[in-house]
Length: 281
Ligand SMILES: [Zn+2]
Figure 1 (cartoon, helix red, strand yellow):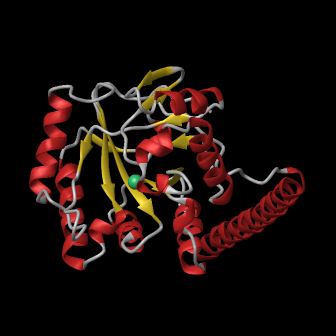
Figure 2: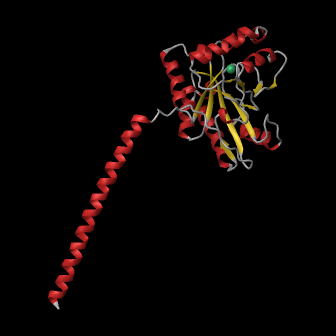
Figure 3: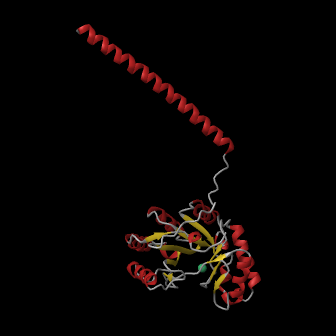
């Protein structure tokens, strides 16, 4: 009886040994074939284009929030970029070519660009019209050139522009703009650019550049614009703010509070402006 038990125990051990050898052999084979696939992929695979634009399907039960920050790179840009990443939301930075006038500021532009698809770099002109808006827009060819220069200098990935000092919309040939900026809008449209305005502005004090509305107040304004359909496109709200407003810790904290309030509503989805409906690339 005992010898019979020993025989069965020996038989089981032998089977286990053969199985484990076989598994090891298969694993090794799998590893070899995987590394072959990987190495052949490395040889033939094209590098992934970070900016190969991928459309998204908008969910009609959601509300899309486009946080936009204008006039960077400037004091406040780093705080905004870091916070956006920390809170894991998406945002768009409309930057100004002439502001990237030092190594550190130019580096901020490159950093923002490298963070796509979470952060999108977009075009806010070269000169910001030198803050002489009437003169700028009365010379539409010169103004258009100012945008094209910024597009090249900042290496903006998509043809998306926000006009300095003016909320205008040009989306796939459909224009909503004041008579002052219509001529430049038509030029930009004929060159394939999208122009993005805003629905709600988080205003700033023009002496201090500090935010005017408290976080809960601006969150209420966003909610109200969406629920009353006071937006350019139903269920999509574009929020204008400026990097410099949030350069001090207490105001970076205000921005964090605002985003946190918006995040609590499960209908809200944060997107970059390239995913606004109807844009063309
Ligand atoms: Zn601006």
